[in-house]
Length: 81
Image (cartoon, helix red, strand yellow):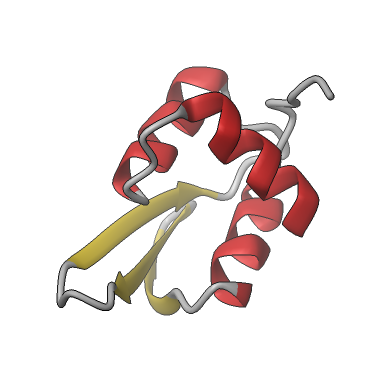
């Protein structure tokens, strides 16, 4: 299966909310979300509310989520949107 990097801000927020991330705030066109892992690590993620998130920005979001492998993270996000 090939990965997609075609996600909107709304797609990413939906996926993150379904996996325990909580809305923190919205500043302009960016939504801040937060999750605390089982080992107590707090992850803050900023998602731009664009129709299509550029791949570089998507890589940053994946990194903020703690992803080790970008392609796998994209496949996970695509399956869960």
